[in-house]
Length: 126
Image (tube, rainbow, N blue to C red; front, side):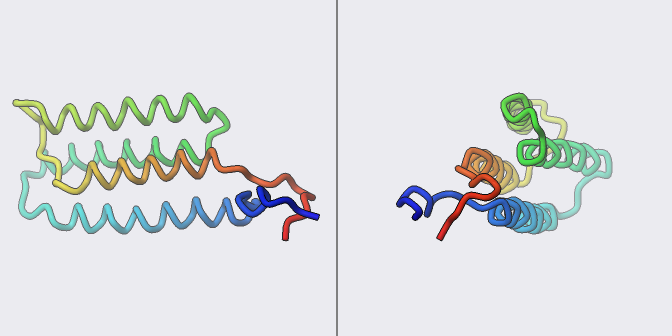
């Protein structure tokens, strides 16, 4: 007999589906954000790609790394660094307006998913 709390547990497949859905969805949203940047200098574009790739990589570390807290800490530092670079007076590149909020929501959802209760193999859930 399962308890009421079991309804809030994710099975391993549900957890995997959640991680895959987040990555697919936010990857597409970032594509839209970068697609709207218009005509920018190649150097600025490369810097933007490096910053975005670094942020995406650290967000993915949260979902795939065994070192959960370390991954979250690194991700926070990377996102804060990108925010700082994008808001500095002599910034290296202009951030698309919706890029950082997109990365932030993705990061928050990755952390929430990672700390969700996951059923152990063999647990009986209804």
